[in-house]
Length: 233
Picture 1 (tube, rainbow, N blue to C red):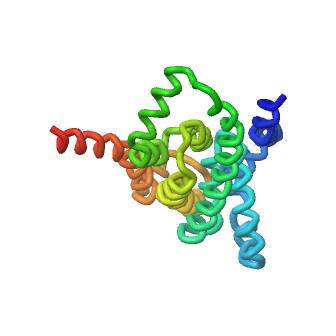
Picture 2: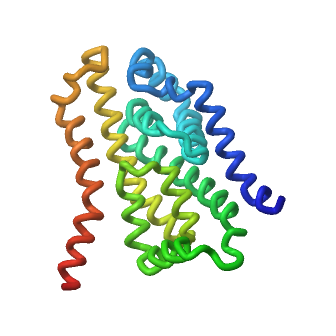
Picture 3: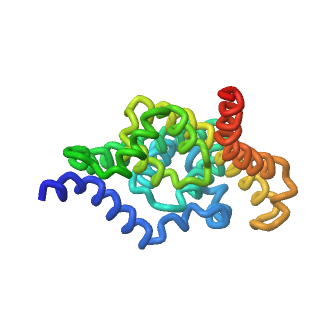
């Protein structure tokens, strides 16, 4: 019963995420769906910018905290509707808050598991992480192809310090969110011109550059690791 109580906050978040997925609510944020009412939505945002900004932060926080897949469409929507600067600020705020909620719930769930002697494999994995926590945390947070929610739970399980988690999430997350927001803003521009989502998007440098940046970002931790190995030798 004690273990169940420890997992309760995390289980509630997961249940909320499953409920959200079952409603198909994320489909409303897909670029082709937003394109149909983009002008109307932007006009409403212009009338009530503070309310709209807080709503976007809230939606992003909820999506990240529940760990549901497909959060990328929410970030893209921020770029499409708020532009690069405000979209990045709002989405980064929501992503950081949501990740913090999920991290604290996960850490609470794994707290009791730290009591007693853990299995040898668990001890080895955590020991390896704690030997180089900054390098491993930045690697996990910077690679865009790792699930954001999965990385958050993994870092809680690895006993990542809270300050390091927040720094990596706010810093690395802002970089990743910024790239995705630029992509969303570029999609908005192209959809507005072509009135559809088609392959012509990939002829626009403002679409190609963010995609290339995501690829390079994924390779950055590997390159740093190789550089450190050469220095050590």
